[in-house]
Each structure stands twice: as C-alpha cells, then as structure tokens.
Length: 155
Picture 1 (cartoon, rainbow, N blue to C red):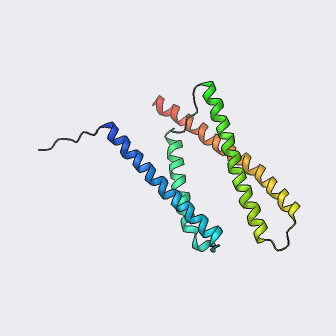
Picture 2: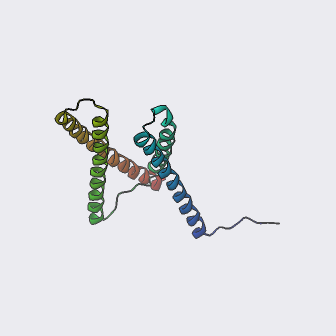
Picture 3: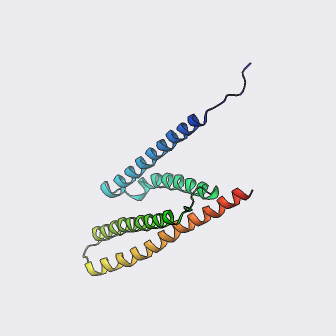
C-alpha cells in the first residue's frame, strides 16, 4: 500500500522555475513571430491576430492572477523603494521610446508625401500620453497588488 507522496520544496521550486522559463520561451517566440509577421513580412492583420490574441491573453492572465494574489509588492525599505521607482521610470521611458519609434516608422512608411514636422509632433504628443498612461497603469497594478497582499495577510 502506497502512502501520500512527499515532495521536497526544493524540487517543487525547481519545477516551477522550469515551467516559468518554458512559458517565457513560448512568449518570446510568439513575440518574435508577431514582429516578423507584422514588420518584415507585412502580413495583413487577419494572418497574425491569433498570435497577438494568444500573447495578450497569456500576459493578461499572469498579470491579473499576480495582482489578485498580491504578488507584485513595493519594497519596504526607503532606499529600495527609491531604486524601484527609478527602475520603474526607466522602464516607462524605454517602453515609450520603443512605442514612439514604431509609431514614427509606421507613419513614415505608410504616408505617401510626408510632413516630417507634423509626424514628429504627433509622435511626441502620443509618446507623452503613452508614457503617462503606461506609468500610471504600472503603479495602479502594483498598488492594487499591495492592497490584495494586505487582504490575504489579514485573512
């Protein structure tokens, strides 16, 4: 007669780490596939919307579950919090630069006769709005996760 299997926490942690790495490889593969389909092959949206949908659903699921369970937490120490905010702003700036570059290149590519000043100014305005939106969204997610973590501790 077999009893319940006992699993070592180290084994469970390693299995979870491998699963996470596997999911990351799949996500990066989808991202590369999507970028190739959209920007290199210039396929119509009907040929790559499925890849985008799968990526979006996977990312949304992970984000929603982590926020619901209070996984994304702010650091407790003041120095670590400042460092976290700095990294947060840097990642927002990098995301904005990538977004602005892609927007500018797509506008430049699709336009017949290009008004560079108008294209640059509209891209800059869009980049400012994008930066504010992405920064706010990241802070909202982290603050909501902190509140959920506090609820989970109280229960």
